[in-house]
Length: 107
Image (cartoon, rainbow, N blue to C red; front, side, top):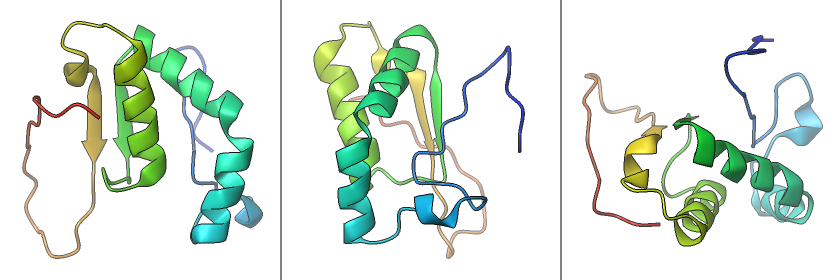
C-alpha cells in the first residue's frame, strides 16, 4: 500500500487487488459502483476544487471518470479548470510517451 498521508489523497475508484470483490470490470460491477459511490464521488470532486488531480490508468471513455469530470465542470467556476486535471491512459500499441493537451473540451 502506498502511504500518501499528509501530501495527497489516493482514490482507487475501481477497486484494489487487495480486495478482489471491489474491482470494477463488467456492467454489473459498474452498476454496483454507481449505487455505492455517492460519497466517494463527492470527496473526489471536493478534492478537485482544492488541488490538481491525476487519473492514472483510466480512460476518458470510462463512464465513472467522465461523470466525475462532468460534475466538476458543471458545478464549479474555476478558471482554467481543465489545467487542474490530468489523465494518463495506457495503450498497448504505443511505445513512446507523448503529451496531448485537450484544453477546449468540457466534460
